[in-house]
Length: 170
Image 1 (tube, one colour):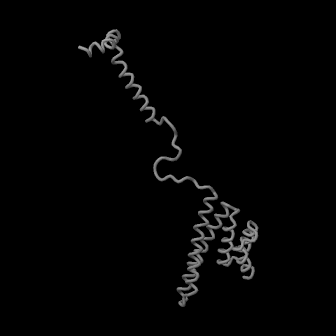
Image 2 (cartoon, one colour):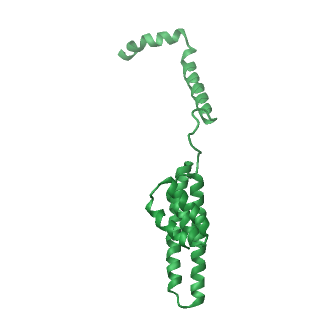
Image 3 (tube, one colour):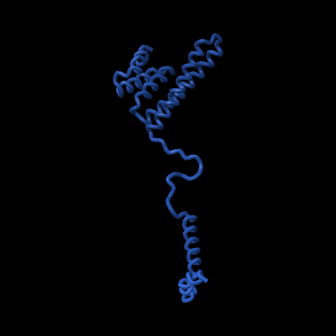
């Protein structure tokens, strides 16, 4: 038989060392089991972000300021619409209700603009809106202070010059 002759040197080798045949599979099994246990028990790299759930990286102060600013701008737009709606009302009760909603929305926007200026004190746009919302709420001294700050940060800033003059006259 040719196959027996071909494998004769291999069989001869294992006849001399009979323990090698069962030892290799056993050693490989133990090595594999140990490796799986190590990885299953927390071996390997640490995750770069928390596992599970939605992961949102922490935004920088500038990004947080921009987010607060954008939200506040939307609030101002809504408050301006409510203010116009109040001016169009002929019924005093409806006018008062719309005016109160506008005031609350301006106040909410002011908080967000103030937060934006705390996170990024050099954000001249936010300072300008701090002035605008203060003026809409009747806080003229605070409005002038905020417009001054916006103009110090960006001299000649056109969006702050006209409202600054209006706040001076009110």
